[in-house]
Amino acid sequence: MNELLTRRPDHPLPPETHERMRADLLAAIETKPRRTLAPIVAAAAVLVVVAGLMIAVRTKPHTAPPAARPNATRALTAAETETLRTQCLTEANRITSKSLPHPFTDFKVVRAFEFTGVRDPKVVSTWLIGYGIEKFPQPKGMPELPDRSHPTYWLCSRTAGGVVSEPSIRFGPGARLSGSPFMRIARNAGVYTKTVARITVQPKGGSPLDAVLQDGFWFAPTVGRTDWGPYDSDDPGRNDFVIRAYDADGNLLGTDSGIDPSAPTVTCPLVFVTLPNGKTDTVPKTPTPPECVEYRWPS
Image (cartoon, rainbow, N blue to C red; front, side, top):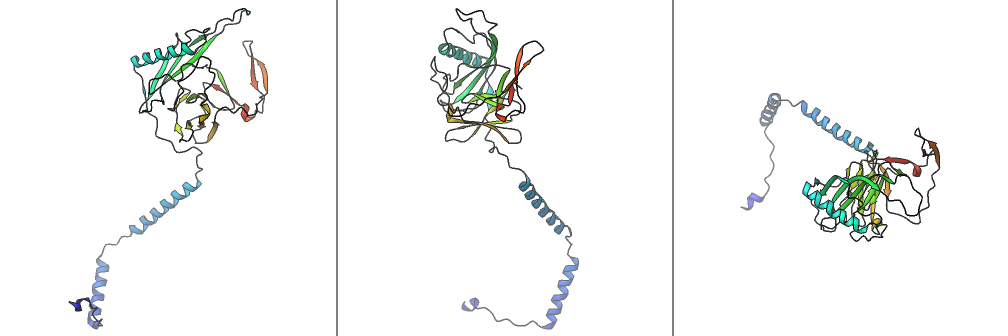
């Protein structure tokens, strides 16, 4: 057994054995199929890889973060919509001034939808969009004023726990957005113009969420405020969310990180013009500073 583990000594082969092996090798080379395409295919593969690398290097990186999983939505049924509308009207009337009783009773529902898959009871999962004519009464003891009614969109939201969050958001068509093509009208909702293709909402300490864009409005499933009082004017949790808007190429168009009381007030010079109907309007002077550029909504 030990001899099997010992290397055997090498012995030179006889000359006639060398000649026979050489002849067999030459015969095998001549009869074997030639693979002339193999080097070409290999070279092409290398070129494809190199070209891909060149494209990756030359492509300008997008400012926008990678898109998150899309937030799926579903339209509410007629019965679900009516239930939500009743809740919203009740809560809106509770927190609205007595001089404007039942502010949205005559508004028609344009859309009502729900983010599917929301489990946290504090997260806003459902939205209602209404449209109608908002009428303001004439102040007592004041001279008669022009028509104090105008078309208005009404937005109301509800958490996954069934509590109304934002019962009386108002926004009118023909509004002007100054300095930015988008605006928030709640911590998790707002409006945008046609230059915007994507909006993200980033809660404090969290990752950006992709908002759903619908007919000039954007919505995101985040924690909502449910403790509004009759005289509350703003949401103290507004600054806990950073909103960013991007164009179709992923370029950052603007950021809204909340209201900063220390920020300097921007004065935008205007020019007064007379419209064909005889009314007076204002337009920005040119050249217009970026913070003074106006965007009409809807667009």
